[in-house]
Image (cartoon, rainbow, N blue to C red; front, side, top):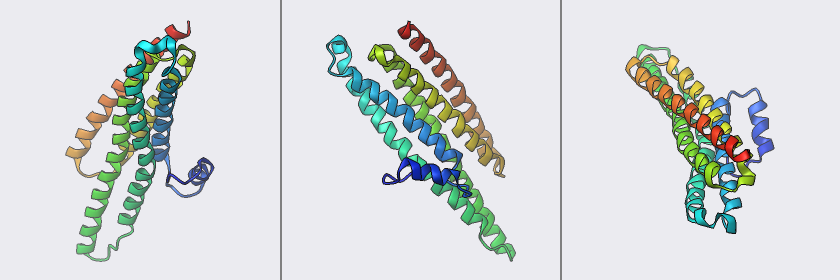
Length: 208
């Protein structure tokens, strides 16, 4: 989603018959929303006398969450670009054996690149969830529910991105690359789920 594109325009693009932007971009958007909520909680905590003892930490978390929000936002468009490269590779000529070989090499390279984008989203989700846990535990208590939503959005982003990694890996002939990335995906998913549950426990305690 380019910086000047409105949310309505982006949603229209998603809802259109074009396959991109699709699930990968939506996963990145969910990550950006989760990070944005973490930033909001920091903003609601900084400057409040009641939370003066955690102000420096909240300022640090705010910087990190805003950096992650920027990265997620950039990945919305990067995912679309990566998918388009895959489609371009499939559109290469395949009349002769050399053309077929060139086309297959291009498809493999583009698919690997398209796999790495949602994988990057997943990694950023783990980093963002760690920040969400901090604001859930130490941030403005009136925004505890927002911390819960942030954690849910980030885990949803992680799970959504994982689906995009897996569907790309399924089309790859490089079994070594695919096996390695599958293991990484499963590890990231387990970590994300654990972090979500931890955040939910913190939120429940703060809300009570």
